[in-house]
Length: 234
Image 1 (cartoon, rainbow, N blue to C red):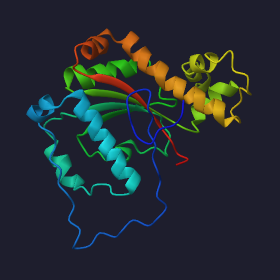
Image 2 (image 1 turned 180 degrees about the horizontal axis):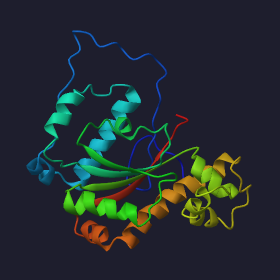
Image 3 (image 1 turned 90 degrees about the vertical axis):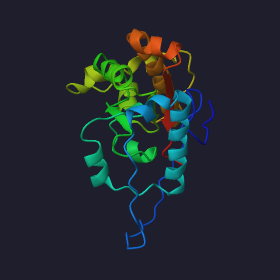
């Protein structure tokens, strides 16, 4: 599959850019925005498509280097008595993917779960059910990324402590390319990309299989479960 330039449902993937330039210093002419924490009523009016578009728009601001300036202290105080986030994002633990910044989201906007290799297990779907069924989030997004160390380790069959059983969650994506003619090595960038993408797709399907709650909500149009891939190269 060819990489695309924006975030989209499952078949399309997220392209982001790190801009290597100094951040402007805050001055009296730059006033931090106080984005209101979403109310329950406002959350209820959002559709899954609305939330997906908000993430796309936020990603475009990230790519262009125009992230929203926020007054986090005010947002923390506003969110003290409740939260009504828009989405639940499952990401890798990789330090190079700042999830809130990638989508230009602030305090109270999104739930974030992180695990090396962005796979699901019993705890992750449970957290997603809390986010969506209990707290009203409208979107579940699985966010993989290029050059993923966990994916590379799964490809190479790394053995180390608790990492070994953890990588078993990614192995099905590796093993799905039994007819691949190239080198099945972490040094093969094409194969690493293929496995990272497949891992996102399989995780999306596994979430539906592991969670009848989320699958039923998606069938009813209450949520969307989608996937994306963060492209560090661009």
